[in-house]
Length: 322
Image (cartoon, rainbow, N blue to C red):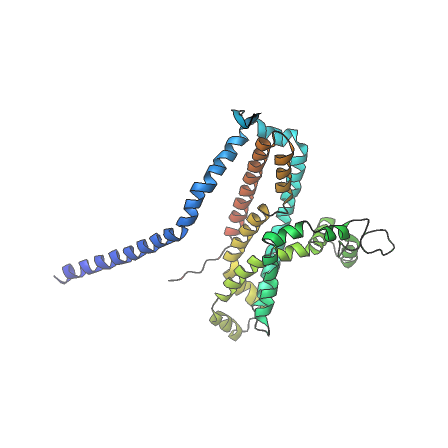
């Protein structure tokens, strides 16, 4: 009889737990419902129209236009007829691949520094996040059309040092890095990469603010008791970082890598998107051709996101919370 009495109690408890999980799931849908409705009513029709345009030929009439299905002709023209698009696409993807590790490593480095106990820590965090606020909206448009900056970066102007070359746009040159690494067996590709990163430090800082916040949130979620145990065992700061901090923050590295790819894909300074916009506005049939180019670029970026997620997921450590 005791067994018969205990069974309904367990069943009732399981129903209560399931009911609590169901309520949490419903609450989550309530929060994402505005986005789902806006996506279905606003963005989904635009996406469908874009796909339709990419497979069609447009004919303009008086005050309207007609679309005729042409299959993959626009995609073929974008890849094999418009050679400038392929060059722009290649350079844009190379820049995207170079930017991902630079931004993630820099933001992780700054997050570790800003997580240390020091005077004015909150002020330093705000200072490093200010570029994220400045690089949005109207300020970003003003910066994109900064004629003074363009004037300083031209080869005809800048600071005249007697060499006839502009000294304002570049912080380092390949010659400087080669002198630094002259006794090391370092390839020229690595030297050029380092020079490009240093000269592009302004953009890297501007695009690292959100990643820094994500890393800071991950660092602050690590229990201080773990670091105290490492200190008692005599572990150095270097060992603590690679054995504790890095594995614990590895999920944030995956998130930031994917976020960086998407942020670069939608940036106004993206050379591929700028070229697609140019095709859209310049030529008569630019609507359909630019739609095909946009979907080609989207599929390539989607593949890059999948590759990044697959590679980093194998090294991600998820802490079990029982």
